[in-house]
Figure: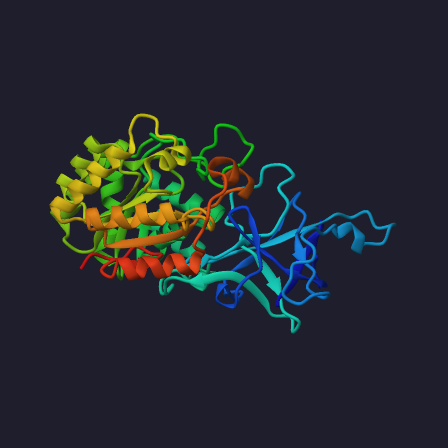
Amino acid sequence: MPKLLFAKEKGEWLDFFGLDMLGRLGDELVIPEDNELIPLPEGATLTMVPGRVPIGVDMLNEKGRICSLTYDPYKLKNKEDKEKVWAVAALLPQGYTRTLLPAITDMGEPLPLLGYTAVGIMEDGQLVAAAVQTDEHKHWHPKYYNTADLNEHIAKVQEEFPNNSIIKQLALCSLEYGCFTAQNMFYRRWEAGLPVSPQCNAACVGCISLQEAECCPSPQRRITSAPKVEEVAEIAIAHLQQAEDAIVSFGQGCEGEPSLQADLIARVIREIRAKTARGTININTNAGYYIGMAKIMAAGIDSLRVSMISAVPENYAKYHRPCNYSFADVEKSLELAQKLGIKVALNLLFYPGFNDRVTETEALVELVKKYGVKQIQIRNLNIDPTLMTQLYGSGESLGVIAFLQTLKANLPNTEIGSYSKTVK
């Protein structure tokens, strides 16, 4: 069994071999199974979970039985040492799906919006994370990004498009937020972002670009104005004409809902296709603004990636908090895409102990079958576990491994992965 890992307030990682690692599935504390753990992946990072006490299990007295579910880290410290110690979590690179949350207390201030993953340490010092690999990160390995020559690539493209407002925004996203799709625009490869919309028609609980209050600080700032058609088209055309495995995507972390700029996007698509047939034009969207989605699809978009936390309408609404659309509008967009033969992927906002509930799994399978969804991209949801419990309470879960097996068994023609692909 891996052992409990925790951290000093100033950032020093410590292990305690008197307690074994626990994980959390929803709000239930569980002992990790072997198939739920992997060596900490390359590109993963550890983060201290401020204000949260780690919970371990004492397996020394009776093997196989949980003897203690509470752990006060202060007991490990000398009475004279007042420095606090907190729980530790892993943050996974793209392509990995977490199987368990950290076993932590619920007390404390709201946590930053991160994908907290259970982590432990073996007796030989090997760190392990509660995760499975769900996609090959051919284009998304961290080693390909934030390279020493990134500034040179940015300067070159800025010189090519000196007055382009999107290039200015993508430079900010590349350097300040480390955004991979932003950096790809400058590396001139793979999937590159095209942020266009300062507005949104939802108020998602875990929105990473805008929060009504800074109780859960957003890790990015949203753009404040829409670009010009010409600005979007010129950089999109250059990317699609020159990049390897070229994709341009509307709908980025630094913007709202892109379909609210449907007229702009439709004009951009037509300008692109008047110049080049190369590459894939994609939109990352909630697909709730049906009139706008219809315009975008009519203009010739190649693929949609539709974000949702749940295929159960009332659970969808609790998280996404749509302002002027319903889940039925999302389904209308999916139906139109199916009719027009447009490739659809679901961007499933995934949280262990919620999405793997039986009712959630059944609803997801039904939706995918009904609308011919080609891919499910499983993305670790960035959220405070306490907040998630407040939203959805408790429920019986299959477990993440069984959830993935159920999807593969029931959806043999649907790819289960993490990344958008070019449309062949």
